[in-house]
Amino acid sequence: MRKIIYLTFLFLIVLSFTSYAQRWKRTRYEFIYGIGYTNVFGDIGGGAGNAGNILTSVKDFDIQTVRPSLNVGARFKLSEYISFKLNLVYGYISSNDKFSKDPERSLRNLSFSSPIFEQSFQTEFSVVKERYGRRYTLANIRGLKNLHINTYLLAGIGGVYFNPKTKYDGIEIPQSSNNGQSELSSGATYPKYVLAIPVGIGFKYGINRKLSLGIEYGNRFVMSDYLDNHKQVYSKHNDSYMLMTFIVSYKLRTTRSGLPKF
Image 1: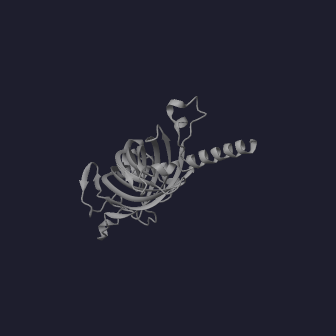
Image 2 (image 1 turned 135 degrees about the horizontal axis):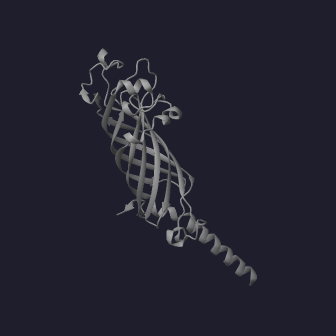
Image 3 (image 1 turned 120 degrees about the horizontal axis):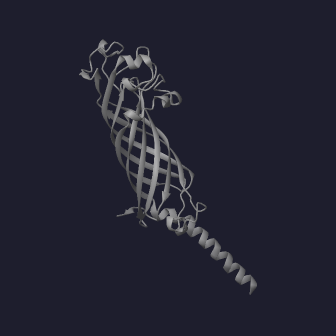
């Protein structure tokens, strides 16, 4: 009799663990909505850091030139640790020499602004996986001991459209004009849709079984040095820009056929 009770108890534990472990499969799909801001690391404004070097370009961050961004996307969870995401971003980037701490840039007095439209496919790897269950909702938190935040790293590939407008002393100049340190005057042309490589980190917390709130930081390395319509003479580095995004995620139930249920 004791053996039967023991085996029954063991079976219930295994069944409960299996049910919990497979719970993520019930909500593989998510819609993503976000709002945030951008900052560009290029040859106009900022400091003297190299735009293509993430360690030095961080010094170029200028709160006076941050611009808004909006994004929508969809996420598919391949496993508890790996997800795929399709991401669309629309926003603006801008920079101004007059805010630069670099004396030469400050005297140059160039500025630029541009819309950006980015499309990317990203892979996310969860360092701290997402938890499921009622005890991980806000209503059941006692202090911080049950606070469990999904932490993930991301990388991907995509493209970005941009169309910069440059000003000198507040007056707009044509893209083919010579501003004294640009290679555009030599007749060089450049594409306005280029390859972009997103990398970053994100944090996500489930309010309930369907809704999550998150924050994501990502840097975009673009295959162009003309994001700001300006190329330093002898420059060997491309421009880049960053996105800080506050995200709301909505989970969809997965049907037995593996498709999302709307």
